[in-house]
Length: 374
Figure (cartoon, helix red, strand yellow):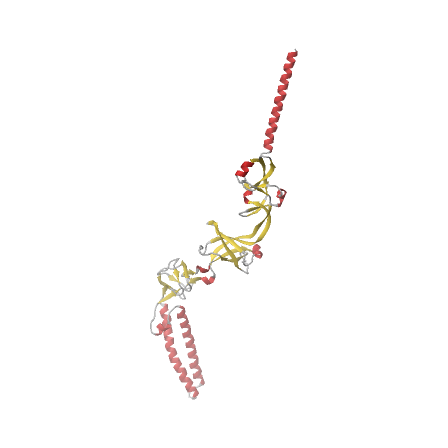
C-alpha cells in the first residue's frame, strides 16, 4: 500500500513538471511573438558591414517650386516666312534642319499679277516725267501772269498725286524684292524671290513646288538657336516666391538621370486669365544639348529650410509606411535594434525629414546604413 502511494505521488510530480515545462515553453514562444520587431546584430557583423549609428538632427532642405515647360528662343530669334503676295511656288529646295544665312534665297513665287504691278509702275513713271514738265511750265506761266492760279494748282495736285502713287508702287515692289531700276529698264518678271530675314536653321517647311500659297500662309520657319532658353509655367499660388537670379534645376523626362542648371532671367508681369499662371524665362548654363520644343521638368529653388532629418539610407519605405531601426539595447557582444514606424516629410537625394510627431526619438541612436526590414 505504501509503495503504491509513493508511485502515485511520483506520477503527479512528473505531471506537474511537464506542465511547468510546457508553460515555460509557451511563455518563451509568446515572448518571441511580442518582440518580432527586434533584430540582433553582433558587433563583428556591425563592424564588417560598415554600419554606423547617429541621431535625428537638423539639415538644410531646398524650398522649391515644381513646374514644367519647353526649350524656346526669343521672338527676335524666330521668323515665320511668308510672301507679300500670293502665288505658285516656283523653286523650293530647303529641308527641315538646313542652315541658312540672313539674306539667302529661300524660294521663289510666280504670279502673272506681279507683271501688272510692274506695268503700272512703268506707266506712272512715264506719266511723272510729263507731269513734272507740265508743272514747271504752269509755274512759269503763272509767274508771268499768262495762266490762271487754278491751272497752276491743278498741275501741282496732279504731280503730287502721281508721285504718291509712284512711291506706293515702289514700296510694294521693294517688299516683293523686285528691283525698280530693272523695271525702269523694261526688265519685267513674273517671279519674285523670298529671302531669309534672319540666320538660323529651318524648323518647318509648309510648301512645295507648284503649290499655291496665300499671303496669310507661312511658307517656312527659321529659328536662330544660338540664344535658347527654358520657358517654364508657374501657377499663380507660387508667383510671390519668384525672384530673378534664382537657381533652376531641370531635366528631360526621357533622360531623368541628367540634371541641368540655369537661373531665372525674366518673370512675366501679367497672369494668364485662362491658366492663372505666368511664364518664367530661364537662362541656360549650357544649351548645345537641347532642341527647341523639348519638354522639360523643372524645379525653381526659392530658398533653404532647416528640418529635423535622417540620412536617406536610414529610412526604408515598404507598403506605404516608413521604418527606421532604433537601438534598443547594447550588450557586450551584440546590438539589439527595434524596427520603428515613423512619419516622414520632404525628401531629397541625401536626407529624409522626420516629422515632429516622431521627435521623441531625437536623442535615440539610429542605424544609419545597412538598414533592412526583419
